Length: 132
Length: 280
Image 1: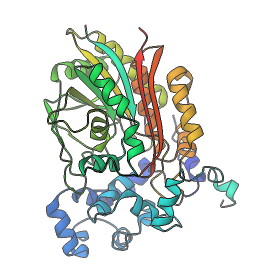
Image 2: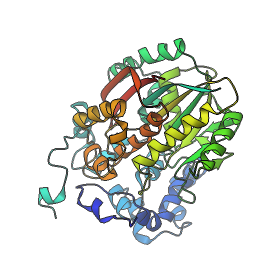
Image 3: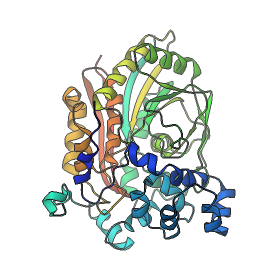
Image 4: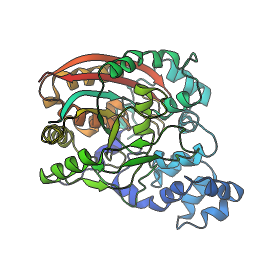
């Protein structure tokens, strides 16, 4: 069966982590995996730039990490489960980190979740939203 | 002969593990969710089993992208707990069942399911949070465990048809084991949730409810639901629900719905939970 990755591109506000993006983001995600040890977390936090330079990542990927720009990291092949190692190491929850990718503050996002979450109506298609 | 005696499905939200480990299950935020599992904790005590086959996904905790198996099975004596970025959860080591797991992995490969065989595996919240929900905080887990990691992180994930068929093959393989064991199968992950992008926080209760109904009563149709629909309707991470089809396939044609629970939210996620028993 021929893969059809194009079909995922109409979902608004969503980056599907395909095998193609996985290739592009391999070194970024490898860096994230390295933060599974306390020793590496300490080294990273002591000097982020030097630690990142140990990885064969693009400058764009490194800058996105330094900026904690999670959406940019997704665009450059990161996956949220890998990226979670970055925010977990800083004591942030998924709710706190994920909310930074939305147009809400962490408090507004938490309030939305407590009220039942984001309604899918209006969020099914970029075409429907006039975004494509 | 070994027999599958029950199926358990449940979400595996990491924050639920934190709540258990830090003694916050009775906080206002968590109390209603944990209350929904009280029945289940008693039920698994009243209906004990020897082995739990736990279908779950690793969350970049053990598997990086250097090796990404589509279907894998642990055959080890024991599984250590992963450090997911804030130190390992303070829970007992998970003990395996090498005799049954080697039999299952071999049977499945011979049945054309190309399982990756894991003699070493550390397990993350995908497997351990469901155990905490069902078993609480024991000094030692009450059952042996066979981990069955599925790739639901990288697209393409295995199809729904393949997942249901794998469950059916597991049922046959368990029944062909020369040993008197009671076995449960668990499907974990879900329900609707999206933890990335501007659309993060998506929850779709009507869709989740229909999924639960179809999983119980009409898995033969449910298996054909395209992954694109899971992503649109249940969020990019809602595709984890294909793992529940593996559980369902292992329970045979007809099941009894012993228990159902649904709750929003746990962190970014809709929590769903079923206990099913096979009718034959």
